[in-house]
Length: 205
Image (tube, rainbow, N blue to C red; front, side, top):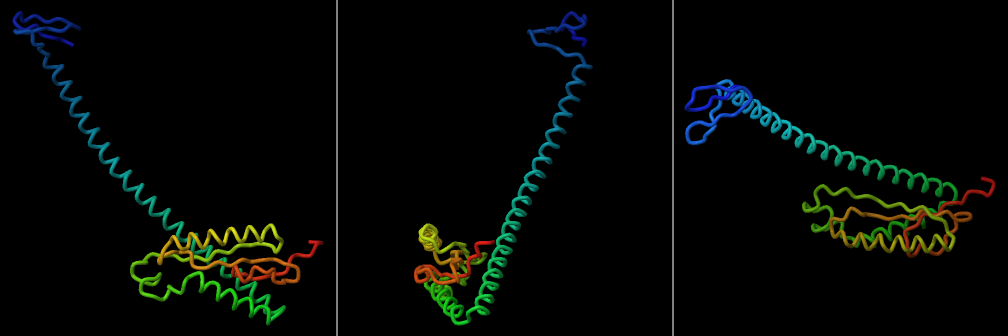
C-alpha cells in the first residue's frame, strides 16, 4: 500500500503519512479498495436481511403445520375412542341386553350432568364465541379393585375441576370409565362416574 506524505510529495511503502494539519492522506488505490469493501459489505447486509425475512416466514409456516398436525391427531384419537366404546356396547348387547341398556342410560345421564346441559344454549359451546372448539371424550380404563377405584375417583374429580375451569367453551365434553370386573358386574362406582363394565380376562390369559 502506498501512502502519500502531504506537503512533501514523497511516497513510502507500508507506512502511513500525515498531511498538513496532521490528517492522514490515502492513496487512490487504497481509497478504491475501501470503496469496494464498503459496497461488498452493503450487499452482504442486504442478503442477510432477505434471508432473515425468509427464515421468519418458514418458522411461521412450520408452527401452522404443527398446529394442524395436533388438531388432526386429536380428531383421530377421538374417533378411535368412540369406536372402542361402540364395540364394547355392541358386545354387551349381545351378552346381556338388559344390563347394556341400563349402563348406556347411566352413562348418558352422567354425561349430561357433567356438561351442565349448557351445550345447547347460545352462550355454550355452540355459540359463535366458541368457534374453533375441538371437543373430545376422555376414556379411562380401570378395574373394579379398591386401589383402582380410588384412582378413578381422584381422576374424575380433577377432570370435572378442569372442565369447569374451561368455562362454556371447554373442549372436555364427556368422560367414561371402562371398567373390567368379574362377569362384567357393577362395582358400585357407576353412580359416581359414568361407567361401562366389561368382563375381565380369564386367569389362563
